[in-house]
Image (cartoon, rainbow, N blue to C red):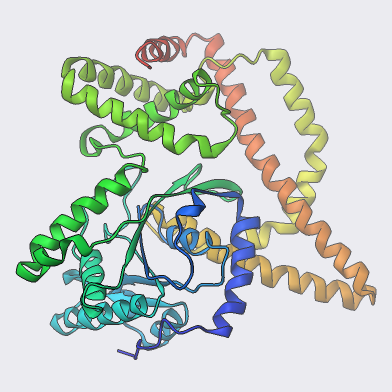
Amino acid sequence: MIDFTHVGDFSWRYFCYNHYLKFFHNYLYYRKMHVINRGNIPAKGKPVLIIYNHQNGLSDPLNILYMFDDFRQPVFIARGDIFKKERVAKILRFLKILPTFRTRDGGVSDIKFNMTSFSIAAKVLNDGGTFVIAPEAQHQQGHYLGSFKKGFPRIAFAAEEMADFKLGLQILPVNIHYKDYYNARSEVVLTVGEPFGCAEFAEVFKNDPNIAYQELNEKARARLKAITPDIEAYEEYYQEEDLLRQMWVKPRLQKKGLSTSYFPNYPAEEVALLQEIARMQQQKPQKFSDLMQSTREYLNELQKLNLRDWIIGKKAGLAKVFLYTVAAVFLFPLFLFGLVSNILPFEFPALFRKKIKDRQLHSSFNFVGGMVAFTVYYLLVLAVAWIVSKSFLCALGCMFAMIVSFFIFYAYKKGLIKLKALWRYHKQQRQGETARAEELKNIIARWSW
């Protein structure tokens, strides 16, 4: 294993590389990135251990990395099996990522290396750095919190023990909430919770570290859960509750006079909604069971019709759908230009993504593959256009036109999917196939708060 001792040191090479990546991430891949309660982030130079809900592969740590306005360089931790090849390990070290091994990732010698990683993490924090870890130790398949593992409290207590529990470590919970897990040009909200410490568990730790680990995990999980939409009954009713989350949050926001188009309004409302559903399950089990049964039947109807909830009951008459179709035909040449101009870099990530069975990793491949492919492609376009036209300004204009055409192409593509769904819905509606789905949606709507 290569030496990670200086992984927390400031790096100018990383600084330059990281700022390009930040621009691509915050302004191109995502349409908008929001940070709520930014004032809760401790100042640079103070020891900060960030914990977050892990649900979307590499996208999660990238969002944590790019929520900072200062020039800090946080250190992350990742599963050890990806460090097996020395060349890969060197790249990950450059990216300020430490390895941690689970039993299934390696042998006894690998597991022992965890103590080295924890010591390095503790030193990073004692030097006033920022360390980031997902306490669930793996990403979840949706909107729920898994159990917290011992890695996070081990690092917290190792850092405090190194300073004789006078470090003043701040543990910062952050919820990451996606409007769309998988596709580009969406929005993401990071809700920063209030920082807290672990020095209160010092005596417990000295007597029995395992009890201290458990108590800190319980406190940390409660803090993160308070700002995270968490479907508690995910093993039995994840699909049902996730659909209710999507169906009910907008009416609740409207009832409170809050904008439904401003995405940062959603996480807190979804937290409150899912907590109410959890209380219903505990206090009114029969009512909860009836709701789940109706929602499950509604889900089956949607699958049978190949439709999504947003379209059921939508008031868009045939004339309106026809006008949308005319507009789509009128704008088709712009779409075609964008398609032809950008199809190669756009499809490049799919070469790797289709081999990945875990869909929660797809956005990671979309981002990394897209960044590499579009950067190389547009630089080649610039070079070829410059050679052909012998004018740098003409070449720059050509490249800019292709970049703009990509955004037109992508927006048109998403709109076309919705237009096809509208035509399908109206056809099924005329044939009476949607009646049961519409009835069930009305029944479920009467259950909302």
